[in-house]
Length: 247
Length: 247
DNA sequence: CGGATTTTTGATCGCTATCAAGCCACGTGG
DNA sequence: CCACGTGGCTTGATAGCGATCAAAAATCCG
Image 1 (cartoon, protein in one colour):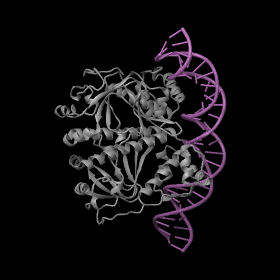
Image 2: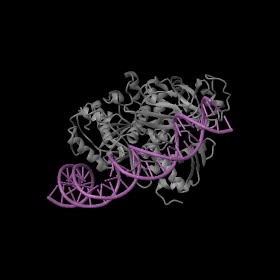
Image 3: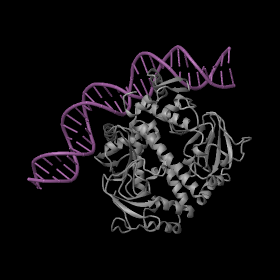
Image 4: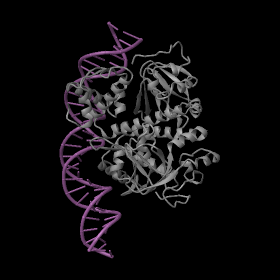
């Protein structure tokens, strides 16, 4: 995920301007008027760089802010006592991380950078204050939270009712759509997560993920070269989901 | 789930008063001051009765309000094109239903009453208006949404990383805790959902759920009589989750 | 009471996990 | 620049958990 920053980034802690950011339509300001967005400029505190494999926050950390991914990408996960990991999501530029912390004033999952990344820090107290004044911000924030709930329901569907190849097909289609929304190719992209992380997210073992990739390639649906994916037959992938005969 | 209503219910559409409701500490007003709660009385529009197996709303219905369960209980589910159902949650008194609708102004799941039930209708536009004025309401509402996200992460953990008996043990412990919070017995309760619905929620087939119940009974953890459950050894159930030797 | 629904239990199947080995890519240091 | 080491990926063989198929028993409800 190459960065598409327009605002100059000179140092950690630099002020960010939502009004100047080209991720607007993917981020919190989506759907807000230019005038309202200008008011966000005072809200977003600073940036923070997070290096690959570093934590943005951990389970138990005090909740103070939510984060908007500017560049790079993250995973969020929860751990079971015996060490089993469940990846709960992958976040790309424009997406909001940290909403889990509001409920108890402490984070309930870990957020880890999958590559060198950059986030905007949105102090939550300020966000609540400003959304009492700016109706459109209030509404957008509610939509962001609701969208996360709807996404979670989709993951439950995937984990609870789909078979291995359906899950992976759904994952690839979802990634493709999100890359497209960010101006990248829908058909060719580079996954930042390992087979094991994909497997954890999809409720599968890494070997099963690998075998499903290989099967898709045998069937002419995709080309796989390690983390580089090229979708050859998107219709065929979608057909896997709907139980339709492959195109 | 017997009802514990204090406010008299005379007819569908009657005005409800949060300030007089004994579900306060389980519902949206949780943590708000008495003064602030008084302001909610004007917010909650009316009640609605929903008979067993009737829909409170369906996928695609226009989103206008969220609902607080007063009496009874619900399930929410999403359907796949080929008919597969995924139950995404079971809701008891005091819990909020309908947050999924905010994101697109249309509901993305179905909500069905598991028994004759009763909900408070909270028009969403009014909720947003009032929470711009009442800070504690704004914050409580954000907590309710965040709690839902955290709960969803727990379900992902369950579906993605746990084995059949662990899932069912987690389910029983969760139900026990929620009954306790409502003043009912922690050890003895009546499930309102079928084995098939439990299975759908847990990503298992109904036969597997039934077998796991039987196994728990053989091992002296619970007593099962159809939908009536008595927990005999809560420590043993919890041990199943932590992979500890059974107590 | 009687039919329908739900639940239980048994027998068998199949998908995914597990165990194991080898391969590949990439980064590091000589 | 290449040798080497390591982490990640692929592939094969086998095992096991939960699904599926099947039938009977219990319960609910009109």
